[in-house]
Every structure is written in structure tokens, then in C-alpha cells.
Image 1 (cartoon, rainbow, N blue to C red):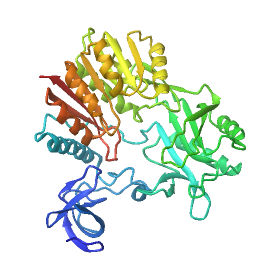
Image 2 (tube, helix red, strand yellow):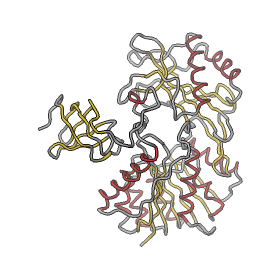
Image 3 (spheres, one colour):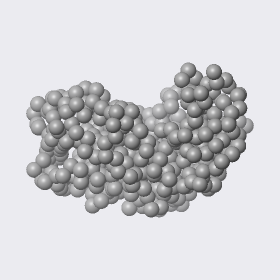
Image 4 (tube, helix red, strand yellow):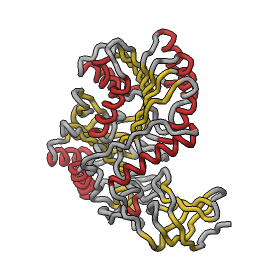
Length: 449
């Protein structure tokens, strides 16, 4: 039996779904952060559970040819870019294998899985910066990212995957906040004002939106901070204040008010313009989003006569992206503000063949299919995948094609294992939406048997 604090020398035989190296000791699985398949490492066991354990590298005895020195000072503590110690092209291979392994486990076979499509330049790609603001152990204000699996904030002045101007604005905001003596949130005492800073940028329009998440609605000097920040950066088109006084890990609260500007920014995906509000879901890597959506539309093989259901439609991006090739688009999304954005985006792009409904997909879909028959269904669910009722309804109504966009290979595989009762999985295309992280987006096309 493996015990905590034991030391072992192990061979790394695989990569886990979160990017860790995997070793076996007498058949018992050990997950080791920072280890690469093919390496031999000395480890110490840090945690033991019933069916697996965690280990920490003490020394690398035999180094992988794909190991690279990390170029990020917070990499080891942050945990965000868990593959930053591996050659980028090799990370694409790891993600392809990750998708294949999940599918094999759920389906007992591997359908056609293409090589993961990467980025030419996997740096500064994120259009959304989201930093917690709090206090350090000495009570001093601090802004940055959470240390891996903790709520300790690591000071972060530069992040190699965040947009460069967004980081400059964040640093300026924090400096002004301290100068104006606006108090950071203290998670222990639940006092203070500023909890989070969210900066979103239109990569093609260069428009910036700043959202200040506060603990209370009335924050002294916040108007002065807004004036100084907008005078410093002309690219800031709007600033919002979101109020979240709950003791929760959820970042945004229910109330948002606009402090400056129109309350939204715009950006383009392909030829289509989209309005983005403080609460809108919008893919964080627009370059790879175009790759992903283009592949999804290609898989749909639209001829202009199809009715499309766009489930979990957000602000309508994928449906509008495909609208000129379809007869009708019908989107469903649970967030009312997102549906309002979707309707505005349809008007903005003169898309007249769309309809957007607000509500839970599992509640609205059964009634919708009674009124209208779908030729193609686009699904883009959250990480937890589809509710079983959604999958059951799809199996009942049997659209000709389902194009499933997934941000989680494990739940994609689980859902496909249900859908493949009546559908053939034609092809899966992984897309590297989040370079150097363990996350992998995929688009899969299924055809009715």
C-alpha cells in the first residue's frame, strides 16, 4: 500500500486529462504535476486516496526531449498553463491523445480523430482577463491569479496568454485603486470594496470593456478611478460595476450598473459583428474560435434549406456565423441578457432568419421540436455536458445531423456514448483553444444511422 511521504523512482507512462504525468506503482496510479511521458523521475507521495495518489517531483533522472524551460515566473504556482514546460507542438499531440483516450474509454473504440489544430503564435491570445483582488498575508493589497487549488492570490504583472494592453490597463487600475485608498476585498472578514477586475477586449476592433466587481454598491472614489482610467486609455469604451456581496466562489453578482460608456463593446468573428456585454459568454480565443466555428459549419454541410437548432447558444455566435447558409436558426440559452444580446446581434448583422428563446435547453427543446423539425442541431454545452433529457429528446426527434462543440473531452465522450445508439460518429476535430493549458476544445459531427 502506497503511503504519504514515501519516496519512489517511477517511469512516466502517460499524460492525464489535466496534463499531469501518470506513473504506476504495483498497479496503483500516481499523478505527478510537471512530469512528461517517457521521463524517469524521483518523487515523494503527497496525497493518497482510495484508487490513486499524487506525487511531487524531487529530481528528473531521465529528461524528455520535449521538456522546455518555462518562460513564465508564476507558472509553477499558478497552475493555469499546466503544459508550459512542454514543447508546444508536443502539447497538440498530447491533446489529440487525450480526446482519443476519453472516447475509447466511453465507446470501447476510437472514431476518426484528426490532429489537434494549433496556433501559429500561442501567446497573448486571451481576450478576457479576470484577476481577483484581495490582501496578502501582511494585509497589503494584491492583484493577480489564484495559486493552484487555493485562494491565495499570486501577484501577476505579466501573463503570457493574456492580451498585453489588458494587462497594462489592469496594472494601471490597481495602481490607481491603491493611490485612491479604495480597499481590496478581504475574503476572511468579508470586508473591503474591490473583489475582481475583468477586462475584455475586441481583438479586431481593439475596444475594451472593464468590469469592476465590488462587495458593496457604494464605493468611495470609484468615479475618480473611472475618470483617471479612461483618460489614460482611449481604447476603454465602457466601464461597468457588478455588485457581488455573497460569500461565494462565483465571480459575478446579479446586479450590474454602467459607470462609463454604452455598456458593451463590439468584435468580429469572420464577417459578423457581435455586441459583448459584461455578462455575455464569448469565446476567449477569437482566432481559434473562427477555426472551430468554420469547422462546425463545414461539418454541417448546409445548402440553404436547413432549419438549425443552436442549443446553449450564448449571444448567438455559432448560429449567426452559420445563418447565411441556412433557412432558419433557432437558438436556446438560459441567460436572459445573452438572449437579448443574441437578438441585438442578429439585427446588427441583418440576420432575419433567426429566433432566440430564453430558458433551460432541457425544458424548451421538447416543446420546440413539436412545432418545428430540425435538420441540423448545433450543441455547445458547458463543461458538464448535456443534460440527459436533451440527449433523449434528440434521440426521439432524430435530426439528420448533430454538430457537437465541446470544451471537455470527458463529457463529450459520455454524451456520444448515448447518442451513438442512433447516430454514427463521423469525425472529431480537436482545436487548441487554450494553448499551454490542459483544456481542449473539440467539434464532432454525427449523422443519423
